[in-house]
Amino acid sequence: MHQEFELGRFELVSGSDLPSARLAYRSYGKLNEAGDNCILLPSYYTGTHASYEPWIGEGRLLDPSRWFVVAVNMFGNGLSTSPSYADPTVRGAVFPGIDVADNVIAQHRLLTGLGVRRIRMVAGWSMGALQAYEWAVRYPAMVESVLPIAGAAKCSPHNVVFLEGVKAALEADPVYDSGRYRRQPRQGLRAFGTVYAGWAYSQAFFRNSTYRDLGYESLAALLSGWASDHEQMDANNLLAVLGTWQRADVGTAERGGLEGALRQVEARCIVMPSTTDLYFPAADSIAEVDLLPNAELRPLESELGHVAGRPGIRAAETVQIGEAMRLLLDRS
Image (cartoon, rainbow, N blue to C red; front, side, top):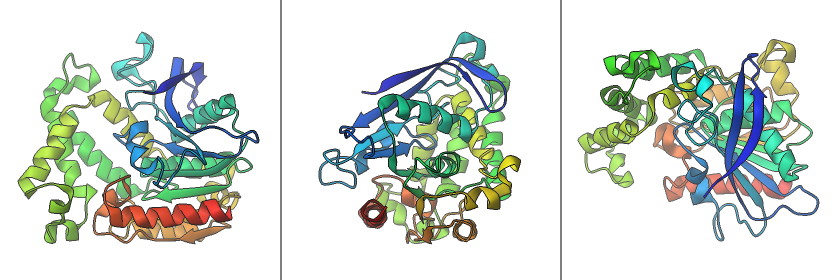
């Protein structure tokens, strides 16, 4: 069961705003008296706070008897303020564009409202990693360590193009009607999921039939599963968060671009690209690590592609992520 943090009228970095904005989250464990045992887990694309629960619990990567773990939902994911769950004036097709910075500013209000003074670690997979970078740049004195997994400080041009492809598949459904649909565009959503499936994993994943390790009996079963999963989602929510992803870039002009922004980071960083990620490739992470003052590149060895970093996906990947977390939490 999640809680909601009321933000009131929330001004966005674009100059627009969200009336009656809410941030959905769940906390695990207790905040200590010093307010410095917090671990923040920002949600990822199509995920929620609950998606991180494979990492949380006694005997798992993050033990709530030691840490105050806060898993928070991004704007647009259906639980925090979203096209499907917003004031009527910004609902549906007129929902404003949300940036990664907007999410992080709202999360900062949440954490300080909860009494957090210092964050021991911001960790996240995929879009969670995008937010981890923004946290490290925007609030350097508050963040001790960050663990971006299969993500980046900036959405690359190639990544933007990939996302345009899945977006186009959804929008081609006439029912979508530029976001003014009266019923969900099911065929477009299924097409979105089908196209996405090919990008989520690596070539080796398919060549070696590794999909069987994840419970898919065949390629047809995998494609059907991805189509069915996305058919259950809200189209405007999907595209709202997709836009947030495409606009991700810590390197604003006032920060001196990407290099200037990353040079400001004070946190200890372990950057974990998946070795077979097709849209957050390791080469991007190598370039970013070179700009970070206190960073280590620790590739996540896996043939699962981008999905390698997803919480609870497989024991081999979870072990590697756990080792990185222990390094940060023991040494930060």
